[in-house]
Image (cartoon, rainbow, N blue to C red; front, side, top):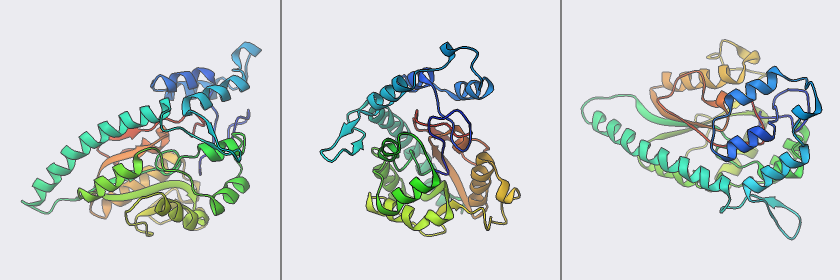
Length: 274
């Protein structure tokens, strides 16, 4: 998504997680430390330190409630453990946002404070990549991603379109902040519209990574890490007069770096992005 390398040893834009990590995610356990440990011990000392690839894939499919259509397409089930976990996170977010947006509304009647906003990652936060992952065998390439996004809409992450539309109706400005490249803007906006995100999706509200012409507000320019790019963009949004009351992402790198009152981590055992 920028998000990236599918079940292979070398760590590049995406680093895969092992069976222990998958199990931890299914149980709802934070796994940031596991991801770090995987990177630190990248050369196994024995075969016992290497999770069985087939078993990892089977666990992921079971967690998402893998559903296969007559034409062989794979989809996640709304009755899966993944969907249940997401619904629990969304319920907590709605409770929090109800209070946070009400506070902003009361304050706004007395003065002119910063307008409340929510910031959301795209892949596996608002749009579910599961079908794409299964099509490519968990092996991301820019070419396969381009081909998929050009012609196929990803499903919304269960319930996130409803949560986003509700928050917008309650007064929150909505911003999408993704590591997808700028060349994928039209496909990404089309997908968000087609799966029910009824919020403004112009360039002022949808931020994609532009390595060729990085924005002036990012001092790191084309060399930004994910954390620098995302936190720097959130700070830019706040400089425009917004208070980021909630930041949503499926990776810890989506959520680190500040510029957000509260973070909400969506589950994702398919890849790890430093």
